[in-house]
Length: 398
Image (cartoon, rainbow, N blue to C red; front, side):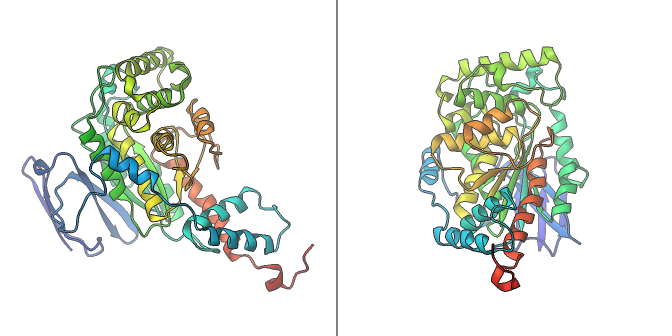
């Protein structure tokens, strides 16, 4: 595959990568400022990525939706699990060589997964982790212990294979994609109005939707964005009430004064965006970030493709909460990968009725908790689909 990349400053990068996905891309950053696309390369099972503002020269490329109303209609028309496969998986679970319920929650996870994959005895062969990155206008208010340029620096670290998520994906055999969304163009400061226009939030949702590999059999979304715990706190406050102080946490490690500042920013954000209250998509537009909206789009696409989802930490939970408020059952195809150390994450998961698989005091982001849960999911399916039944093993049932 021949690839030609033109960056805005005039440097031209050209390369040939025989193991890329089977379509040719040619784009120029200045031509299409809204959309960012990741290019994924596989060489000797290593995954690296480059993110550029992109124009796709693909005749068959059509947007799945062009406005928030169309996106909402897609959410509300989504199908449910395969009831036949679900019943067969339950029956199989009852015949395996173990006492009933002896594998605890692994049994429930396996049955849930089987229903969404439409197979009585499935396994996980192609998990995908997508990390989205974006910058936030509220970062200029001092809500993070790190400067906004760290977002881009960490994206480069992901691309070079040096982050925790790289190691976790390699450990659990997951495909890793890294997508940076207009890092040079932060969202607006939501204390002064909406973070994004409808055009901007729809563009980010589309990026997330199109990032999902239809051939994946499990999806984890992750994020990188200085200031995005404040965005997540504001979204949860808008959707689930409470006080601003209930939803803010230390994020990247802010001190007590920083915590008070975050709560004040959240309060001001809701005051400046009253349309966000109890409205999932308006909360996403007014208070979210591009990477937050992209995660929501990816999780919605996974439902469309019948791909089960493992939700990562607090920021991902806030992103998908926007879907849950729009449409009851919108997250039935998703489980919570872990409970993070971010103080409000437990409350957000409870509001969504999601029990976390793991609780390891993580607060890294990047999709790290969700990636760890891939191992648990693989174990659950290995037992469910690989164990012998009593009849097969010649073991007497109790």
